[in-house]
Image (cartoon, rainbow, N blue to C red; front, side):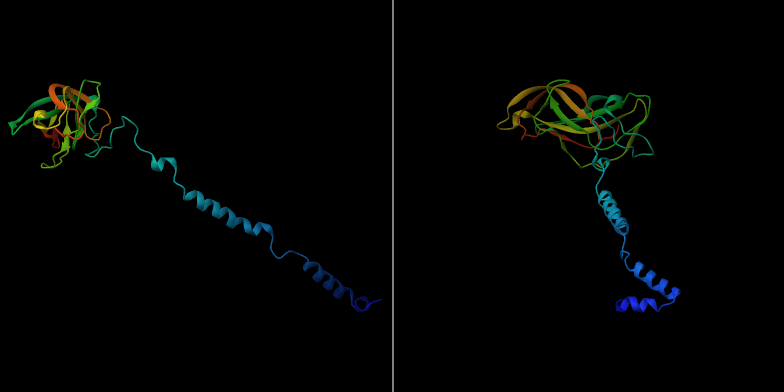
Length: 211
């Protein structure tokens, strides 16, 4: 009988049970594997929340009107407008001044505000010719709510193509007009001499005003 066995032989039954229980508890692991799981799941959640969703970088689709900005009235879009040319300030120093007018032909009011996109073109569905119109910011941008039948107009100038050295002249059939903040366009017929050179800017355009 060794020393440990002799010591245990003199212990009372209660003391012996306590010693054995203490030995058994010392065999338990200090930490269970499950204690690490909360930090792992938190890390995965953090990394996923830092990734932008597809909608964060989405852009409006073609033909989508811009948001309304005047008392809940939606912006005017091309399919509810009719375009025409109106007399402007006349002509001076090789430039002809006219107005581009857009009339609300729909049954609902709409908002016309800002600058149109304008270029010369060779037909209703033709490609643009030369450079698009440059913005003339000499008049302020104002919101115009067009009731059905009402119009807004923008002054624009057409510089004579013959005044530009190096201009490659071409006959244009009219103007392609994009209402402010709209992806759609409309066509206004007009016989105009244009320059096909993209670095020659024949057109200038102001913001729409009430007419």
